[in-house]
Image (tube, rainbow, N blue to C red; front, top):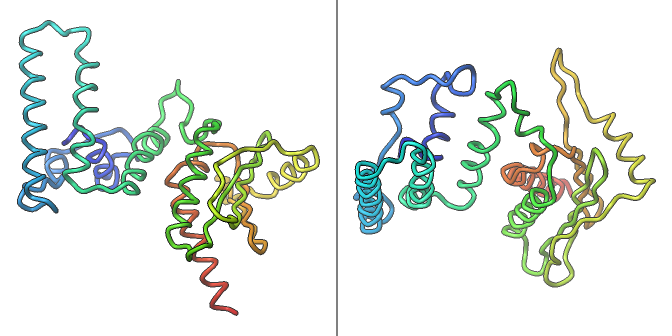
Length: 254
């Protein structure tokens, strides 16, 4: 449990040194990570089964380590057993799909970006790829469609340029269409270039890049820089909340 992604997520939000300077833990902070007994889980029977399964995996792993010389492969085998236990830990703690998105983005991107090494580029500032843009867009539409009225689902595609991209969300006619991407025209490239210069907001020695959301009848246009931090799945959860809030407030003002 203490090596799991869920524990890393918990420590990141509770241990003062984690994410600020070097990763330093005190004993009382490590043991502060909550562990539920099976009878206190949402499904005690299933909790007991998971605990036994994880225990058996670890016992077999320790036996194999004692019986074989895994000096070179040791770290790889540790990662393997950890990967096998991760979904069981999530199930034990009843972590749902959207909570898991927050955990994974924090462990995979946020923590490495806050405490980067000198040789590695900051994860959240890496160029975003097609698959990451697709996962963001699909998560955004899924969240918006959860709260949509019957027959009013949305679909989305992305218009991409060199430094910026636009996620275009629109009302679907029937079943939402599959995700697709389009290249920006030369005129659109110029418009996005001008927007890119206007979005940064300077505050002292910091520069903040804001997302621009444009609401036009049945369409929403979200202008984003082509860096990973703007296209994470957890970002899609936040954007969905902002869009839903804006739509509700607009309806109240009518």
